[in-house]
Image (cartoon, rainbow, N blue to C red; front, side, top):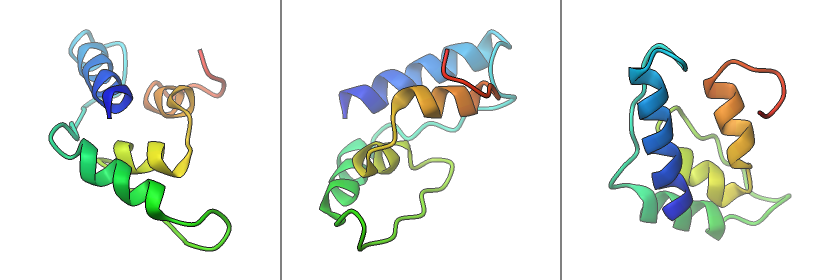
Length: 79
């Protein structure tokens, strides 16, 4: 939950500084339910399709923060 809150704040700062994506929609306030839902899924058996405001769900699924940040910055490799 803390990691996704940190990532949201960082993405918001980068967006306001015009260094990241063109806009940022925060998932603040939904960290607990998203993370819990991602952790509850069984790897290799269950499917999860996160959308643009499901960063906590993606972290619960096991996606690294570097991958999400590089996607936000439209970079091929993690920074």
